[in-house]
Structures are given as C-alpha cells and as structure tokens.
Length: 247
Image 1 (cartoon, rainbow, N blue to C red):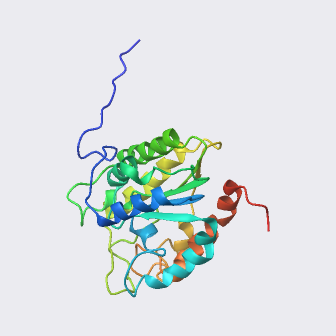
Image 2: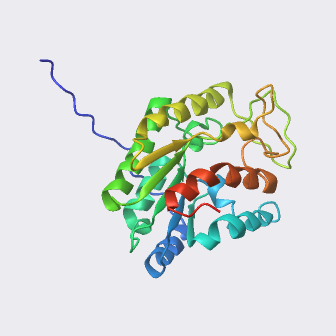
C-alpha cells in the first residue's frame, strides 16, 4: 500500500483561516450572540449588498432582504472583499456562536479568490473548492443539525463585455474560467442529507453566455432586479430545507 500524504493548510492557502480586520466582524459577532436566527447567509460582497451595503447603488436591495429573508429570522454574514480563508477565520472567531443552531446556512463564496486584478494572490479551482469545503466542514462540526446550501459561484464578466455601471469589474480570462471551474467542483460537497448544492448562475446570463447587465450591471454584483431573481431562484430549495409548508 502506498503512503497517504496528509496535507496541512499553510498561510496563504484558501483553507487557512486568515484574519481580515473589519469592524463589521465585531458587529456581526454581537448580533450572533444576542439573537436567534433560523437562516444565515454567509458570503462576500454579493451577499453583503443584499440589505446591508451602504450607498445609493445597493440600498435598494434591502427590499429583497425584507421580502425574502427578514421574515425568516435571517442574519447576513456577507463581507465585502472577503475570500474563503477570511470567512473561515470569521466563523472560527465568533460568527458561528449561534444558539440555537440555525435551520439553514446559505453559502456563496469564492469569486474573490479568483480575482487576479485586485488581490496579490489567487487560487486554483481545486484550492477554492478546498476552502469552501473547510467552511462547510466547520459549519457541520459546530452545528450538525443545520442544513448547508452551497451556491455555485456566480458567473462574472470578462474583458470583452460591456458593463452598465459607474464601476465595472472586468475579470481576466483566467479569473472567469477559474470561477466557472471552482463553482462546478463545489458540487462534490453535497450529500443530499446535510449539504446541498444549487447552481442558479444561469439567471445572470444572456443566451450567448454573456452577462445580462439588466441584472448584473457591473459584471459581478446583482442589482435590485438581479437580487430578486437570485432570491426567487433559490426559493423552492430554501423553503424545503427550512421545512416550510408549501404555500
């Protein structure tokens, strides 16, 4: 029999807990410890913008939060600019101190791990999948009764696409490809019992595969219409996982 090599995460890896100082983290830990949440959304700026990102661009998205998530006693743990390793650190340091355990955690993470234009280090699809797995494994250890819904990383626009926003996020060819490949790999995390996987990224694409800027004007973040489409796309699965009665 061959020897099995045990891999140990090292600083810089997508699955090595890495602190990114943020006042929002401290605020979220306080919320976690003072509230009761049935639904928790974990992620980066894409999650953060739904209800809690300041500024005139994203404030309208609060209507989506109020309509789809707030009535379900939900908590937004989205952090602008964060990557798998940063979310892992956050969750290990207070953001999972949830009592009682939530019914469902929705996880959307990984696009910033691919961004070679705004981050000095990026990760491969396999490494991003490892980082996502580390987050899922941590949630499962801390809250074994909680169901985890992993969303495939949303598509993002490349250099040849035209955005419709004051700031447009063009991804390099490698960035766009890595997002696509990493997102597909995370499907392996689903077991159909405790961990589930859903790909709703197609709602942001035109028939030719380009980003629909009516829903994602900056080629990365959904606007109000995009966030509403996203919420509606996950609604049947989310309702089932929460154990809600069919309407």
